[in-house]
Length: 349
Ligand SMILES: CCC(=O)NCCS(=O)(=O)O
Image (cartoon, rainbow, N blue to C red):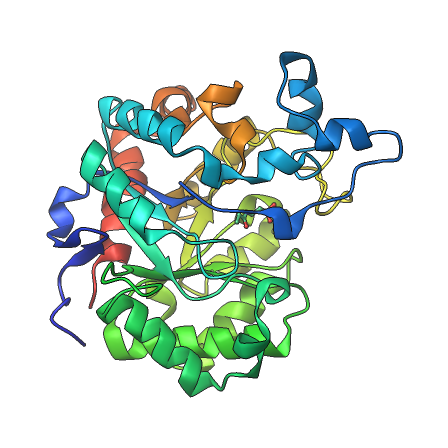
């Protein structure tokens, strides 16, 4: 427990949780995803190395992780700033920026964006998936990793005095690696010490979310302060989803706007459409989980920005909310999902 109790922590300092407003709990504003580059199919190398062009946009949309420039969201600060102003104009209040160590977190840029747009930005502490862990990270004990995470929240990240306000996204592969298990245990210990929110990127198996929540709980974390991200591409079976929901963590559908035929990271999975995501959320509401649902877009590549013909950061507020209303989800429930649930999760205990 710290003096942060009862507050949320943005890159500009602690704030009263009531001021957060409509909140996207899983986005990226600047990051480098080159570590997850997928080599293109034979014969498509020129497209992979080439620039963005109108005639290539459809290929990039279908192969987002094979276009080298597409992975450099860190080059788009001006476009992102413009989009944050759109988000604010659409009624948006807060963005949780999930970039952690391994994918080029840049808290100085986040602070500048928050100052210049008036959008609350909350930065993430901790580490992305094992393949991005440095040899030093791999060699650390749980206590050392905990010390780093706690320091990023209490003192500042990456040699600055700019402080993180959540732990995560903590990256997990499937199966979990030894280094990822230690990072999860450290995240749990940081949560037990600080009462801070935690958010996890699960590996691509329907067993991964449950395994991770149990590991966190065994290491001292509260499920009720933890978000499981990317459920849209992870748990498809209804019974399995409801069994997972029983564990008590937040259930995040955070790939809104991602609609493609071929999911490059796991071709055997059919990525759902936005309509299917809304149907899942409706099911969870009907089953009594309206206090546990969160939504976001997880923008992490250039092609998802308005500048490149993408849906941008305002898609949920502008397009998805009206569709949810048409599908019989009341404004009251939508406000729970986009305001009350994020506020409860982001408030330090
Ligand atoms: C850093 C961005 C990220 O991890 N996005 C998740 C993509 S996916 O694993 O859900 O496809």
